[in-house]
Image 1 (cartoon, rainbow, N blue to C red):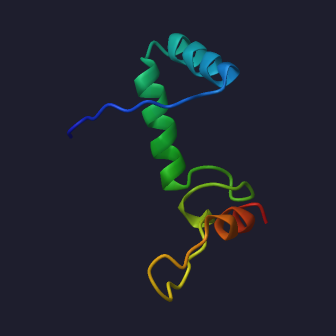
Image 2 (image 1 turned 60 degrees about the vertical axis):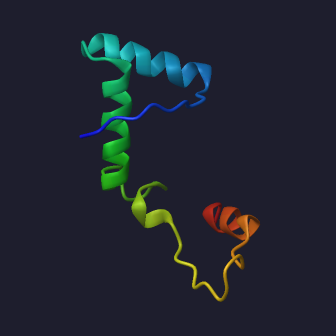
Length: 78
């Protein structure tokens, strides 16, 4: 599988927790983040929580550009 580089911004405490977990499990931070992201995308979290692929609403596009970010964010908070 091809890798690519990216930059993410994390809360300091979240970074510390992930780094601590990586040390405890003798893994790299990259491995911890990849495992967490794969798990999230598979929908492995508890069904009562938000997240995973099922949390996104499908919007019927009427015309290009008709989708408004404010409406998507509002729906995500419901």
